[in-house]
Length: 420
Image 1 (cartoon, helix red, strand yellow):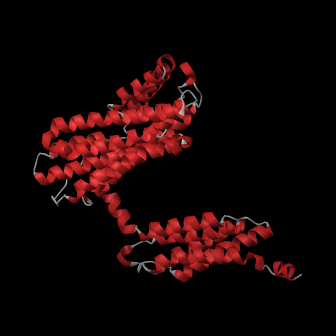
Image 2 (image 1 turned 120 degrees about the vertical axis):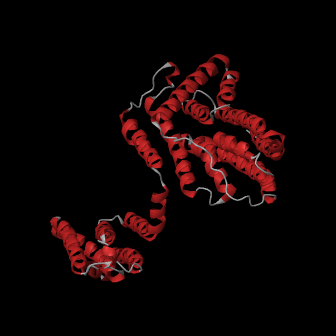
Image 3 (image 1 turned 90 degrees about the vertical axis):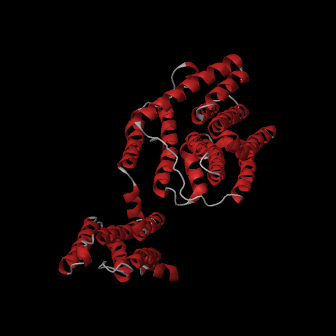
């Protein structure tokens, strides 16, 4: 009887209003710190509560126009406040106005049962407001070339991908235009993330980050650049060795991430193989890192734009060719044919054979062990290629510093294969 009375009094709606209050206080707390903002803790909390109250009245009274009227009322009041009281430096206050409108909308979301989404959006809004200086600095450090990269990736993802047919074609039904381009988007996205981060952070955070980001974009390009710079002096020699080793280990992490996205069921077997290579490689890299001294300004890896249309088309074509060759040779020559393709393809490009092997595994053309072995062989082949390149450019001195690390990574991967 008591619960019925409480429900009749509307107390059952109290949790929604408390959630709205918390959302308003969270966003308002950040705005309170901004001297140019004409709205703070109390205003944001009240606006969020107002959103939930208006949504309640609109829902119970079957008058959805009340929500639009409430939104217009909030917008009108805050704009009037800014017109009557100019802000410092002629700041129009559009950020605060937008944040208030978002708070009202989040209050409405809470009433209609989207509390978790509203809280997540409130946290995201607060983060964007709080990190204004960092975001401004980031945008200023991005060049026109970087912005073009982001736009090109958007074209690859949201223009080209949706119009491709999701259907299998060709021999062995291995070629699927949508799936093939999805792989292009995946690799381009990972490379773009590293590329943009590398451009933003630059040389400020030392060898570990340069090695990580360089490896995320292209471990081969990173090895090439630092093999050249290893000849400058003894300090740069040691630094180059550390960067090259870290970049090669990032490839192992990248392989696990890509595999987890394309074929999650294979991770349980693949992760230990790559993990042992990473563990052994980190031990060797730590030995070189302990002996590393500050060498001043670090050179930047000269990486190309990973999302250029011709680069995406080239990778897509390479992926399809490797996929069809792997399917055909696996059918004709068995394991040896597949592994031969892995070794040859891995010399210059790890991604194509990795994605091809995973695609064939998803199609049940090859087993999980065959897919993992082909990925591992491609990685080892790529390591041999990079080691040879580093030796020919950096000479014996560089070889002495990276040989143990390369052997450790290769040995870890081979050891992991024994447990398959």
